[in-house]
Image (cartoon, rainbow, N blue to C red; front, top):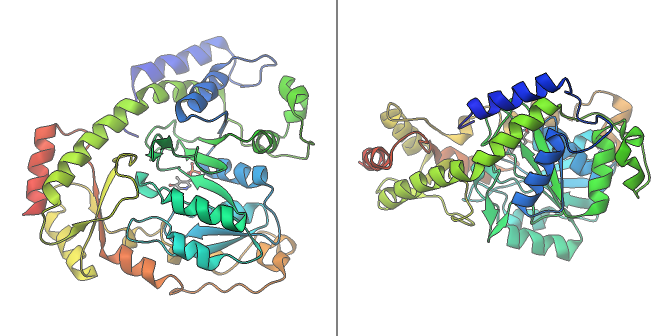
Length: 384
Ligand SMILES: *Cc1c(COP(=O)(O)O)cnc(C)c1O
C-alpha cells in the first residue's frame, strides 16, 4: 500500500449508507461493476473480474484455462507460494524452473521444462519487474501453451507498451495490503478471451447460475466456488485505481534517479531489466559478485532504508515451500502428483542457479515518500 485516505473512507461510507454490501443485488452498475469496467479499460483488456484475493484470481484463471489433473504448469522458483498453489488447487502439478538475472522466469528454463504434459506457464512479474514476455509468448506458441501472467506485484506495469496481464491469455492482480494498490485483501482476473472470462466468472461465484447475467453466459455451467468480493472492496478499489498512475509515476521518477547515480557504483551492478519503462518502480534490484559482499552491503547500509536479500525472504523462494516440496495435499485421492500417475521429484538444489542469483541480489526499496533531492542524496550514500 502506498496511499489511502479520505476518498476511500467516503467510498466505504457510501456503501454502508446504501445498505447494499452484496455486489449482485439483482441489478447491475454497483461499485464493483464500475471498478471492473474501469480496470479493464485502464489495462486494455475486454474483461475483468474482481476476486477476494490474488490467489483466488490465479485459481479462477486456471479453471478459466481448463487446467486440470495430469497437466503440468511451469512456475518460477522465485515467487510467492500462491503461484504454485494455483495449479495445485485444480489438480495440476507445478513444475518449478529457474529465474535469470532479471529476477523473473528464465525463458530458456521454461523451454527446457516443456514436455507433452505441459499445458501452461505462469510468468511472474516479481517486485513489479516485467518478465521477458516476448520470449515466453514465442515458446507458448511453439508448444501450444497457455500463459497466465501473475502480476500480483505489478499492477499497472507494462511490457513493450502493453499493460501486464494483457499480453498472455489471462492475468492476475492482487490487492492485498502489501501490493501497489489495495483494499486489505482482494484481487482481479483479466482477460481478452470471452470463454476464459465466462468460465472464471462461473467458478468465482457458485451462485452465478442464479444471477441476472447468467443468461449471457454461453459456456456450459459447472459447480463453482466463492471468490466474490463485497461492494466495500469494490468501492475502495475504484478510488485506489484513480491513484494508480500517480503512484507509478512517483515511484518511477525516484527509481530513475537512483539508477542514474548507482549505475556507476563499483561494488555491484543494477540487475538487467526486460523493460525498464514498464517496470513499476517499487524495487531496485542490484547484483553483487558474491553472497558475502551482498550481505556486507546490507549490513553497512541498512540504517539508510529498507533493503533485503531476496534469498532470505523466508517465503518467496521454492526452498521455503515445504508442503509443496513434500507433495502433501488435503485429501490423498485428490493429490495432483498422484493423480498424474507420473513421478515428480523436488529437491533443495533443483534450481541452484536461482539460489545463486538471489543470494547475490539486494533489493533496495524505492523511497516513495522522499523528495527527488532526498532520493538523490540517498543514492549517493548507497554508492559510497
Ligand atoms: C501477493 C501475491 C500473490 C497472491 O495474492 P493474495 O492476494 O495474497 O492471495 C500471488 N503471487 C504473487 C507473486 C504475489 O506477490
